Length: 127
Ligand SMILES: [Zn+2]
Image (tube, rainbow, N blue to C red; front, side, top):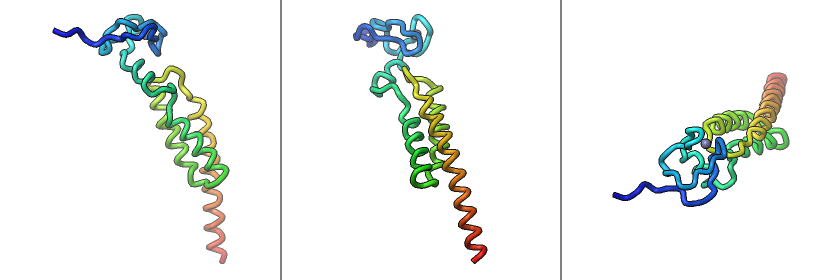
């Protein structure tokens, strides 16, 4: 019978507690904190241990203010998804700040959207 695959790289740090996981079975858990080892693998595979959703949310937030307020509500939606993604783990260093920035700018964009929409409606009603 074949032995289960183990982590050969050394040191291989656990994303939750920093324990060296080298030599432990990939399907197992961190001996120190119990975090599934796949979580540490996932964050390694994605390269930058960041939530892409959070980055996109921030970009949409900026666009929402600078170019098209329609992006605002999407920035809010994505920042919500990003927070969920970050909280579910798999990220060594989370970019929650970007999700927050996306959320705040998303709100500003949405207010602008509402405001412009209101003006447009008023314009149409008057004329
Ligand atoms: Zn650990």
